[in-house]
Length: 399
Ligand SMILES: Cc1ncc(COP(=O)(O)O)c(C=O)c1O
Image (cartoon, rainbow, N blue to C red):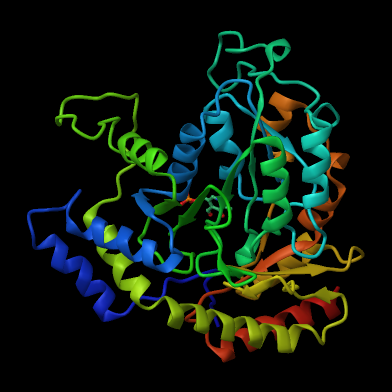
Protein backbone atom coordinates (compact mmCIF):
# COMPACT_ATOMS: atom_id res chain seq x y z
CA UNK A 1 0.00 0.00 0.00
CA UNK A 2 1.58 3.30 -1.16
CA UNK A 3 0.46 6.17 1.05
CA UNK A 4 1.11 9.82 0.12
CA UNK A 5 2.47 12.22 2.76
CA UNK A 6 -0.49 14.51 2.13
CA UNK A 7 -3.25 14.99 -0.45
CA UNK A 8 -5.60 17.85 -1.22
CA UNK A 9 -9.30 17.12 -0.70
CA UNK A 10 -10.97 18.26 -3.93
CA UNK A 11 -14.45 17.61 -5.34
CA UNK A 12 -15.66 17.90 -8.93
CA UNK A 13 -17.40 21.13 -7.90
CA UNK A 14 -14.05 22.52 -6.64
CA UNK A 15 -12.43 21.66 -9.99
CA UNK A 16 -15.35 23.11 -11.92
CA UNK A 17 -14.94 26.42 -10.07
CA UNK A 18 -11.42 26.71 -11.55
CA UNK A 19 -12.57 25.74 -15.05
CA UNK A 20 -15.35 28.36 -14.89
CA UNK A 21 -12.76 31.10 -14.31
CA UNK A 22 -10.47 29.93 -17.11
CA UNK A 23 -13.42 30.35 -19.47
CA UNK A 24 -13.65 34.08 -18.66
CA UNK A 25 -11.27 36.86 -19.76
CA UNK A 26 -10.63 37.87 -16.15
CA UNK A 27 -7.82 35.80 -14.67
CA UNK A 28 -6.47 38.26 -12.10
CA UNK A 29 -7.87 40.99 -9.82
CA UNK A 30 -11.51 40.15 -10.56
CA UNK A 31 -14.59 39.23 -8.55
CA UNK A 32 -13.23 35.86 -7.28
CA UNK A 33 -10.56 37.38 -5.07
CA UNK A 34 -13.13 39.82 -3.63
CA UNK A 35 -15.49 36.93 -2.83
CA UNK A 36 -12.66 34.90 -1.30
CA UNK A 37 -11.63 37.85 0.89
CA UNK A 38 -15.25 38.42 1.89
CA UNK A 39 -15.69 34.84 3.11
CA UNK A 40 -12.58 35.29 5.30
CA UNK A 41 -14.07 38.42 6.86
CA UNK A 42 -17.17 36.35 7.65
CA UNK A 43 -15.21 33.35 8.94
CA UNK A 44 -12.92 35.38 11.20
CA UNK A 45 -15.10 38.40 12.03
CA UNK A 46 -12.21 40.65 11.00
CA UNK A 47 -12.87 43.90 9.12
CA UNK A 48 -10.34 43.28 6.35
CA UNK A 49 -9.04 40.24 4.50
CA UNK A 50 -6.38 40.59 1.81
CA UNK A 51 -5.62 37.65 -0.47
CA UNK A 52 -1.97 37.08 -1.41
CA UNK A 53 -0.05 34.42 -3.32
CA UNK A 54 1.50 32.68 -0.29
CA UNK A 55 1.50 32.65 3.49
CA UNK A 56 5.08 33.92 3.36
CA UNK A 57 3.99 36.91 1.25
CA UNK A 58 1.21 37.63 3.77
CA UNK A 59 3.61 37.52 6.72
CA UNK A 60 6.09 39.73 4.89
CA UNK A 61 3.42 42.36 4.22
CA UNK A 62 2.44 42.37 7.92
CA UNK A 63 6.10 42.93 8.82
CA UNK A 64 6.18 45.90 6.43
CA UNK A 65 2.86 47.25 7.74
CA UNK A 66 4.12 47.01 11.32
CA UNK A 67 7.07 49.25 10.36
CA UNK A 68 9.66 46.59 11.24
CA UNK A 69 12.98 47.58 9.66
CA UNK A 70 16.74 46.99 9.74
CA UNK A 71 18.05 45.97 13.15
CA UNK A 72 14.57 45.88 14.75
CA UNK A 73 13.89 43.06 17.16
CA UNK A 74 10.93 40.69 17.04
CA UNK A 75 10.29 38.01 19.67
CA UNK A 76 9.40 34.76 17.94
CA UNK A 77 9.76 30.99 18.00
CA UNK A 78 12.53 28.76 16.65
CA UNK A 79 10.05 25.83 16.47
CA UNK A 80 8.29 26.73 13.23
CA UNK A 81 8.52 26.58 9.48
CA UNK A 82 11.34 28.90 8.34
CA UNK A 83 9.01 31.50 6.77
CA UNK A 84 7.94 32.96 10.10
CA UNK A 85 11.53 34.09 10.70
CA UNK A 86 12.58 34.62 7.09
CA UNK A 87 10.09 37.45 6.68
CA UNK A 88 12.02 39.33 9.39
CA UNK A 89 15.31 38.72 7.60
CA UNK A 90 13.77 40.06 4.37
CA UNK A 91 13.70 43.44 6.17
CA UNK A 92 17.05 42.91 7.91
CA UNK A 93 15.24 42.69 11.24
CA UNK A 94 16.37 40.26 13.96
CA UNK A 95 14.34 37.27 15.18
CA UNK A 96 14.81 37.09 18.95
CA UNK A 97 14.02 33.47 19.72
CA UNK A 98 12.52 32.17 22.93
CA UNK A 99 11.86 28.50 23.65
CA UNK A 100 8.50 26.72 23.44
CA UNK A 101 6.03 24.81 25.56
CA UNK A 102 7.00 21.11 25.62
CA UNK A 103 3.40 19.90 25.14
CA UNK A 104 2.12 22.09 22.31
CA UNK A 105 5.38 23.26 20.75
CA UNK A 106 3.94 26.79 20.83
CA UNK A 107 5.94 29.78 22.05
CA UNK A 108 6.15 29.92 25.87
CA UNK A 109 4.37 33.12 27.10
CA UNK A 110 6.47 33.26 30.28
CA UNK A 111 9.64 33.38 28.22
CA UNK A 112 8.06 36.00 25.93
CA UNK A 113 7.41 38.13 29.04
CA UNK A 114 10.95 37.65 30.27
CA UNK A 115 12.41 38.49 26.86
CA UNK A 116 10.30 41.68 26.60
CA UNK A 117 11.67 42.79 30.00
CA UNK A 118 15.26 41.58 29.58
CA UNK A 119 15.88 41.62 25.86
CA UNK A 120 19.68 41.67 26.18
CA UNK A 121 19.55 38.18 27.67
CA UNK A 122 17.87 36.80 24.55
CA UNK A 123 19.81 38.51 21.74
CA UNK A 124 21.73 36.34 19.30
CA UNK A 125 25.49 36.06 19.75
CA UNK A 126 26.10 38.08 16.62
CA UNK A 127 24.18 39.80 13.87
CA UNK A 128 26.08 39.37 10.69
CA UNK A 129 24.92 39.38 7.09
CA UNK A 130 27.92 37.39 5.84
CA UNK A 131 28.76 37.17 2.15
CA UNK A 132 27.84 33.62 1.27
CA UNK A 133 24.29 34.48 0.26
CA UNK A 134 25.11 37.27 -2.13
CA UNK A 135 25.38 40.30 0.12
CA UNK A 136 28.91 41.61 -0.17
CA UNK A 137 28.27 44.99 1.45
CA UNK A 138 28.43 45.58 5.21
CA UNK A 139 25.20 45.27 7.25
CA UNK A 140 22.69 48.05 6.64
CA UNK A 141 22.78 48.71 10.35
CA UNK A 142 25.66 47.34 12.41
CA UNK A 143 24.70 45.55 15.60
CA UNK A 144 25.89 48.58 17.60
CA UNK A 145 23.01 50.52 16.08
CA UNK A 146 20.40 48.02 17.08
CA UNK A 147 16.79 48.88 16.31
CA UNK A 148 13.87 48.72 18.68
CA UNK A 149 11.89 45.79 20.04
CA UNK A 150 8.85 46.14 17.76
CA UNK A 151 6.71 43.04 17.75
CA UNK A 152 5.88 39.50 18.84
CA UNK A 153 5.34 36.87 16.15
CA UNK A 154 3.77 33.72 17.63
CA UNK A 155 2.98 30.70 15.44
CA UNK A 156 -0.08 28.43 15.82
CA UNK A 157 1.93 25.25 15.49
CA UNK A 158 0.42 22.15 13.80
CA UNK A 159 -3.09 23.68 13.89
CA UNK A 160 -3.21 24.54 17.59
CA UNK A 161 -3.35 28.24 18.59
CA UNK A 162 -0.53 29.71 20.64
CA UNK A 163 -1.50 30.78 24.18
CA UNK A 164 -2.40 34.28 22.99
CA UNK A 165 -4.03 35.97 26.03
CA UNK A 166 -0.80 36.36 28.04
CA UNK A 167 1.09 37.23 24.86
CA UNK A 168 -1.32 40.11 24.17
CA UNK A 169 -0.95 41.36 27.77
CA UNK A 170 2.85 41.51 27.30
CA UNK A 171 2.41 43.22 23.91
CA UNK A 172 0.18 45.91 25.40
CA UNK A 173 2.57 46.44 28.33
CA UNK A 174 5.49 47.05 25.95
CA UNK A 175 3.67 48.69 23.02
CA UNK A 176 4.40 45.79 20.63
CA UNK A 177 2.55 44.71 17.50
CA UNK A 178 1.37 41.08 17.44
CA UNK A 179 1.52 39.19 14.13
CA UNK A 180 -0.15 35.80 14.52
CA UNK A 181 1.18 33.23 12.08
CA UNK A 182 -1.92 31.06 11.61
CA UNK A 183 -0.65 29.51 8.40
CA UNK A 184 -1.16 26.06 9.96
CA UNK A 185 -4.37 26.80 11.87
CA UNK A 186 -7.25 27.90 9.66
CA UNK A 187 -10.47 27.14 11.54
CA UNK A 188 -8.83 26.54 14.93
CA UNK A 189 -10.26 28.32 17.98
CA UNK A 190 -8.65 29.64 21.15
CA UNK A 191 -11.13 30.01 24.03
CA UNK A 192 -13.90 30.24 21.41
CA UNK A 193 -12.12 32.87 19.28
CA UNK A 194 -10.85 32.07 15.77
CA UNK A 195 -7.10 31.61 15.23
CA UNK A 196 -5.76 34.47 13.15
CA UNK A 197 -7.85 37.05 15.00
CA UNK A 198 -5.92 36.96 18.25
CA UNK A 199 -3.27 39.59 17.42
CA UNK A 200 -3.13 42.76 15.33
CA UNK A 201 -2.62 40.74 12.16
CA UNK A 202 -3.33 37.11 11.30
CA UNK A 203 -2.02 35.19 8.30
CA UNK A 204 -3.28 31.94 6.72
CA UNK A 205 -1.70 29.77 4.01
CA UNK A 206 -3.15 27.45 1.37
CA UNK A 207 -0.37 25.17 0.11
CA UNK A 208 -1.80 21.77 -1.00
CA UNK A 209 -1.15 20.09 2.37
CA UNK A 210 -3.15 22.77 4.23
CA UNK A 211 -6.73 22.54 5.56
CA UNK A 212 -7.95 24.30 2.40
CA UNK A 213 -5.84 24.77 -0.70
CA UNK A 214 -5.56 27.20 -3.58
CA UNK A 215 -2.40 25.53 -4.95
CA UNK A 216 -0.34 28.42 -3.64
CA UNK A 217 -1.92 31.24 -1.68
CA UNK A 218 -2.41 33.08 1.57
CA UNK A 219 -4.65 35.58 3.36
CA UNK A 220 -3.95 38.42 5.78
CA UNK A 221 -6.71 39.50 8.19
CA UNK A 222 -6.74 42.66 10.31
CA UNK A 223 -9.08 45.26 11.78
CA UNK A 224 -6.68 48.13 11.03
CA UNK A 225 -8.02 50.22 8.11
CA UNK A 226 -4.76 51.99 7.34
CA UNK A 227 -2.68 48.84 7.51
CA UNK A 228 -5.17 47.03 5.25
CA UNK A 229 -4.84 49.78 2.60
CA UNK A 230 -1.06 49.62 2.86
CA UNK A 231 -1.01 45.81 2.55
CA UNK A 232 -3.38 45.93 -0.44
CA UNK A 233 -1.08 48.45 -2.06
CA UNK A 234 2.15 46.51 -1.43
CA UNK A 235 0.54 43.31 -2.70
CA UNK A 236 -0.17 45.10 -5.99
CA UNK A 237 3.23 46.63 -6.87
CA UNK A 238 2.78 49.54 -4.44
CA UNK A 239 -0.22 51.06 -6.18
CA UNK A 240 -2.08 53.05 -3.53
CA UNK A 241 -5.81 53.85 -3.50
CA UNK A 242 -6.32 56.40 -6.31
CA UNK A 243 -3.08 55.53 -8.18
CA UNK A 244 -3.42 54.72 -11.86
CA UNK A 245 -2.10 51.39 -13.20
CA UNK A 246 1.34 52.87 -13.81
CA UNK A 247 1.57 54.99 -10.66
CA UNK A 248 3.28 53.43 -7.64
CA UNK A 249 3.19 55.33 -4.37
CA UNK A 250 5.15 52.66 -2.47
CA UNK A 251 7.89 50.15 -3.13
CA UNK A 252 5.69 47.09 -3.56
CA UNK A 253 5.68 43.49 -4.75
CA UNK A 254 3.67 41.25 -6.97
CA UNK A 255 2.03 39.20 -4.23
CA UNK A 256 -1.36 39.01 -5.99
CA UNK A 257 -3.50 35.86 -5.82
CA UNK A 258 -4.89 34.94 -9.26
CA UNK A 259 -8.57 34.31 -9.95
CA UNK A 260 -8.23 30.55 -10.51
CA UNK A 261 -6.68 30.16 -7.06
CA UNK A 262 -9.26 32.43 -5.46
CA UNK A 263 -12.11 30.47 -7.08
CA UNK A 264 -10.70 27.19 -5.77
CA UNK A 265 -10.22 28.78 -2.33
CA UNK A 266 -13.81 29.96 -2.29
CA UNK A 267 -15.11 26.49 -3.20
CA UNK A 268 -12.92 24.97 -0.49
CA UNK A 269 -13.96 27.54 2.14
CA UNK A 270 -17.61 26.59 1.60
CA UNK A 271 -16.56 23.07 2.68
CA UNK A 272 -14.34 24.18 5.59
CA UNK A 273 -16.36 22.47 8.35
CA UNK A 274 -16.52 19.23 6.36
CA UNK A 275 -12.77 19.38 5.59
CA UNK A 276 -11.87 19.95 9.25
CA UNK A 277 -14.22 17.19 10.43
CA UNK A 278 -12.59 14.68 8.07
CA UNK A 279 -9.12 15.63 9.32
CA UNK A 280 -10.32 15.30 12.90
CA UNK A 281 -11.59 11.81 12.16
CA UNK A 282 -8.20 10.77 10.73
CA UNK A 283 -6.44 12.21 13.81
CA UNK A 284 -8.82 10.22 16.04
CA UNK A 285 -8.04 6.98 14.13
CA UNK A 286 -4.35 7.65 14.65
CA UNK A 287 -4.73 8.46 18.34
CA UNK A 288 -6.76 5.33 19.10
CA UNK A 289 -4.03 3.12 17.64
CA UNK A 290 -0.84 4.98 18.49
CA UNK A 291 -1.55 5.77 22.11
CA UNK A 292 -1.31 2.04 22.78
CA UNK A 293 2.23 1.72 21.39
CA UNK A 294 4.95 2.09 24.05
CA UNK A 295 7.52 4.77 23.19
CA UNK A 296 5.10 6.79 21.04
CA UNK A 297 3.64 10.09 22.30
CA UNK A 298 0.55 11.37 20.48
CA UNK A 299 -0.23 15.12 20.10
CA UNK A 300 -1.67 16.93 23.10
CA UNK A 301 -4.58 19.34 22.67
CA UNK A 302 -4.57 22.05 25.38
CA UNK A 303 -7.77 22.99 27.22
CA UNK A 304 -7.57 26.54 25.77
CA UNK A 305 -7.88 25.04 22.28
CA UNK A 306 -11.65 24.95 21.91
CA UNK A 307 -11.29 23.78 18.33
CA UNK A 308 -8.25 22.01 16.99
CA UNK A 309 -7.67 22.37 13.25
CA UNK A 310 -5.56 19.32 12.42
CA UNK A 311 -2.86 20.34 9.95
CA UNK A 312 -0.34 17.53 10.37
CA UNK A 313 -0.12 14.52 12.66
CA UNK A 314 3.22 14.69 14.47
CA UNK A 315 4.16 12.02 17.02
CA UNK A 316 7.17 12.06 19.31
CA UNK A 317 9.26 9.04 20.04
CA UNK A 318 10.93 8.16 23.29
CA UNK A 319 14.44 9.68 23.29
CA UNK A 320 15.96 6.16 23.28
CA UNK A 321 14.37 5.39 19.90
CA UNK A 322 16.42 6.32 16.85
CA UNK A 323 13.81 8.45 15.06
CA UNK A 324 15.75 8.80 11.81
CA UNK A 325 16.43 5.07 11.51
CA UNK A 326 12.75 4.44 12.16
CA UNK A 327 11.71 6.94 9.47
CA UNK A 328 14.03 5.16 7.02
CA UNK A 329 12.50 1.80 7.86
CA UNK A 330 9.01 3.26 7.38
CA UNK A 331 10.02 4.69 4.01
CA UNK A 332 11.05 1.16 2.96
CA UNK A 333 7.54 0.03 3.90
CA UNK A 334 6.07 2.77 1.62
CA UNK A 335 5.14 4.94 4.59
CA UNK A 336 6.60 8.41 4.10
CA UNK A 337 7.37 10.30 7.32
CA UNK A 338 9.31 13.51 8.00
CA UNK A 339 11.15 15.00 10.94
CA UNK A 340 9.05 18.06 11.76
CA UNK A 341 10.15 20.78 12.45
CA UNK A 342 13.89 20.98 12.03
CA UNK A 343 14.46 24.00 14.32
CA UNK A 344 14.94 27.36 12.61
CA UNK A 345 17.88 28.40 14.78
CA UNK A 346 19.88 25.44 13.44
CA UNK A 347 19.35 26.13 9.74
CA UNK A 348 22.81 26.88 8.25
CA UNK A 349 22.10 30.48 7.21
CA UNK A 350 20.69 31.25 10.66
CA UNK A 351 23.75 29.81 12.39
CA UNK A 352 25.99 31.80 10.07
CA UNK A 353 24.17 35.08 10.67
CA UNK A 354 23.33 34.86 14.34
CA UNK A 355 25.63 32.24 15.82
CA UNK A 356 22.88 30.13 17.41
CA UNK A 357 23.89 26.82 18.99
CA UNK A 358 21.99 23.60 19.38
CA UNK A 359 21.52 23.87 23.13
CA UNK A 360 20.29 27.50 23.05
CA UNK A 361 16.67 26.28 22.96
CA UNK A 362 16.56 22.89 24.66
CA UNK A 363 12.81 22.24 24.35
CA UNK A 364 12.77 23.14 20.65
CA UNK A 365 15.78 20.97 20.17
CA UNK A 366 14.20 18.03 21.94
CA UNK A 367 10.96 18.32 19.93
CA UNK A 368 12.97 18.71 16.73
CA UNK A 369 14.90 15.51 17.51
CA UNK A 370 11.97 13.32 18.56
CA UNK A 371 9.11 14.53 16.29
CA UNK A 372 7.97 12.73 13.18
CA UNK A 373 5.10 13.83 10.90
CA UNK A 374 3.11 10.86 9.64
CA UNK A 375 1.11 10.75 6.40
CA UNK A 376 -1.94 12.90 6.95
CA UNK A 377 -4.87 14.35 5.02
CA UNK A 378 -8.64 14.48 5.10
CA UNK A 379 -8.87 11.87 2.35
CA UNK A 380 -6.93 9.18 4.23
CA UNK A 381 -8.90 6.03 4.88
CA UNK A 382 -9.03 4.12 8.15
CA UNK A 383 -7.32 1.25 6.34
CA UNK A 384 -4.38 3.52 5.44
CA UNK A 385 -4.11 4.76 9.03
CA UNK A 386 -4.17 1.15 10.20
CA UNK A 387 -1.36 0.31 7.76
CA UNK A 388 0.80 3.23 8.98
CA UNK A 389 0.28 2.27 12.62
CA UNK A 390 1.00 -1.40 11.96
CA UNK A 391 4.17 -0.39 10.11
CA UNK A 392 5.28 1.72 13.08
CA UNK A 393 4.71 -1.23 15.42
CA UNK A 394 6.71 -3.52 13.16
CA UNK A 395 9.52 -1.00 12.63
CA UNK A 396 9.78 -0.47 16.38
CA UNK A 397 9.88 -4.16 17.21
CA UNK A 398 12.48 -4.78 14.47
CA UNK A 399 14.64 -2.09 16.09
C1 LIG B 1 4.04 28.15 10.29
C2 LIG B 1 4.08 28.51 8.84
N1 LIG B 1 4.32 29.79 8.50
C3 LIG B 1 4.37 30.18 7.23
C4 LIG B 1 4.19 29.29 6.20
C5 LIG B 1 4.36 29.78 4.79
O1 LIG B 1 3.31 29.55 3.93
P1 LIG B 1 3.59 29.43 2.37
O2 LIG B 1 4.22 28.12 2.11
O3 LIG B 1 2.20 29.55 1.78
O4 LIG B 1 4.44 30.57 1.98
C6 LIG B 1 3.95 27.95 6.49
C7 LIG B 1 3.77 26.98 5.39
O5 LIG B 1 3.87 25.81 5.46
C8 LIG B 1 3.91 27.55 7.85
O6 LIG B 1 3.72 26.26 8.18
